[in-house]
Length: 91
Image 1 (cartoon, one colour):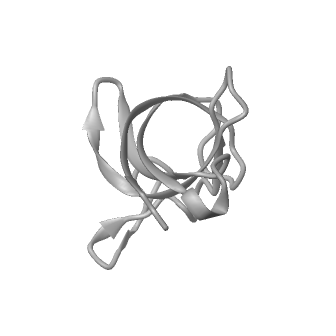
Image 2 (cartoon, one colour):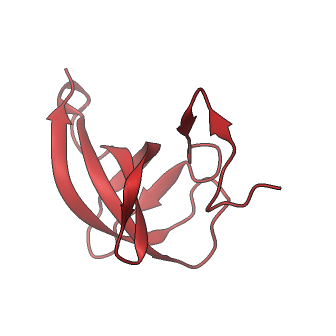
Image 3 (cartoon, helix red, strand yellow):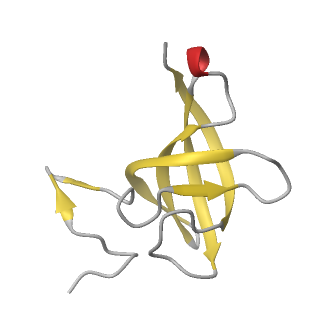
């Protein structure tokens, strides 16, 4: 059985998008669309996500670290996160 922290593998990658569609960075208005798991660090999981607050022409992918969640498993779940770094800008 798969849990929200251990989603089923898809094409060799773990995808959180079916479990959490969007997350909100508390303290800002930034919203992120989860793309895939990229690693673990500290007390959280690090995911690749698109910054939805950026203009469509300059969407930024970021590595974000989810540090705490009230409930995992539903699209639109709000979780506390920490931005780790900007990975690249998509055109």
